[in-house]
Image (tube, rainbow, N blue to C red; front, side, top):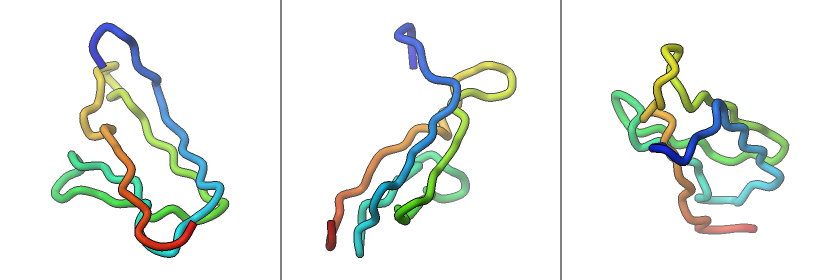
Length: 70
């Protein structure tokens, strides 16, 4: 975030999917963190800014390690 700039929206394309693990995690989602399991051929779209044009801390995300497969 900060002064480096940020994208308005993010699209993650899942070109493959492991048998276990590899989720995209949103640690600030309320009331609990959100984990999206990668499914081959699917996509995930989320906004990085609020409608008021402020960076949205709920959009902070990361990738969990693959446990089994790919």
